[in-house]
Length: 379
Image 1 (cartoon, helix red, strand yellow):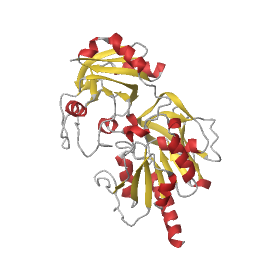
Image 2 (cartoon, rainbow, N blue to C red):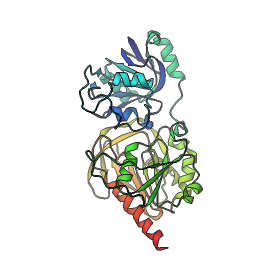
Image 3 (tube, rainbow, N blue to C red):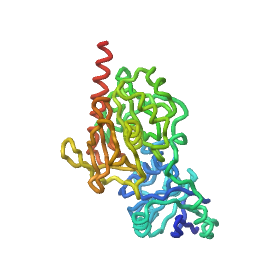
Image 4 (spheres, rainbow, N blue to C red):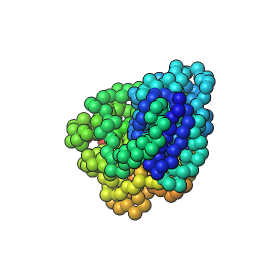
């Protein structure tokens, strides 16, 4: 059945539809990962985005229930060059077509994704409408729909993805993939703010002997402090970080009280809480192959990314030092403020799937948390 992607600048890409039928809008972005489409689909950071995969062949490993990053698909649409007609993996329980149909998400294949990605790199990411079925024939209407879609700048999407109430996370990683540690029910407590948190991040924390309580993004700092945590984690998530004003205020009220670690949106929230600024990038960083330089060690890490906003280079971070930069464009990828016991990275050290170069960041957070825990025991 015919399907189409219409960009707000009038460009039209047609192809074959799969997954659900209908029409949806979103910001069209591209991801350069060679694998991990299932994790991408279920990452809440992609809420209201239509994802284009640069790898040409997608779907051959199917879908399994173990590797999802949340309990649903969050992307608004999924565009690939070629949808694999064959699924061959011992863990697969469903093919990609059936999964997207089940989740109500439109897929588009047989698209010249190289041309589409080059266009986005030149013009920047933009709003789009994706259609599968009868609506795909009226491309004029689709362009008009794309132009009327909400812009990502100024959008607070955290309220749409955060958990409705607090919960405890105890699940560890599959030992087949990671060196795991036993969950410790008496270990230090970390409170994780859910602004779109990925499950593999939570597993990285419990793997290392931490007790983890996840709270909604709207939870006031004073309520979190009543839980007597030994650490605070600020998660990834979608939308414009500057619009998430409640989380910025919460972070400001928590700084200096317990160790704080932020990833992706959490990194941006920490920078804003310190007085910094963020800006929308032309096409962002999304992929599992981004080179980041650790300025503290001089080493280069290959890392996983998913962000369309960045901390500005001229940010006044109240004494925080820049610890990591992206070697492709020199954007800020990490910072720390030792006086306030906080640090963060823009990229994803949990990288599921992806490189493990940056797993040491979780070990560093655990070390800081355990020092805090030991200090509390001595009081």
